[in-house]
Length: 94
Image (tube, one colour):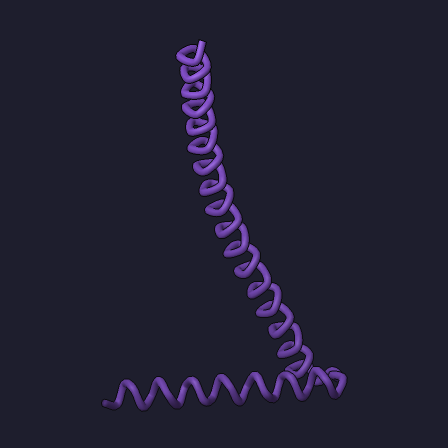
């Protein structure tokens, strides 16, 4: 009787171990999928921001009025680009 109970417990322990392994694998797959989806989302958000900046640049080039907030943001963006270009020039000069 004790031997049978022990066998049942061992069987349950094996089943629990297998289920844990399956769930751990599924968890890892879901984490990988989430990381990929977050990376895709970041790329899409960056593409949207780039597109918005192109629209702002087009508005400036077309001499359309741009609201002051967008103008300040665009100015900051252009200044950042200039700084990055300066850093690249310095790097390439070395």
